[in-house]
Length: 56
Image (cartoon, rainbow, N blue to C red; front, side, top):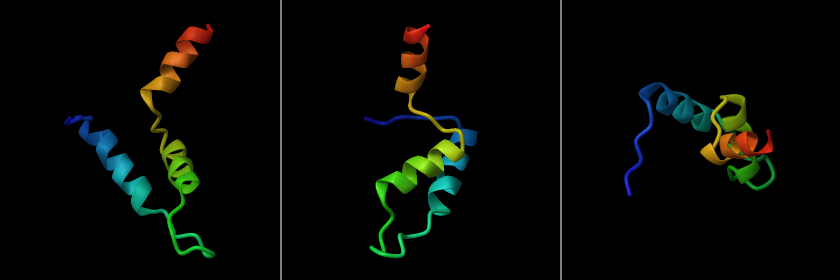
């Protein structure tokens, strides 16, 4: 299924992921690094917004 996001979000997403340096120990980009990069770029899954709405 195709998912389309605004161009600005796409640009922020690609820049955030491209900036991730591989882990010095494993040589891989670890999942936690991707989550950290996306949070730093203020890119969040819709489920976070839904849970914030439910908690109010």
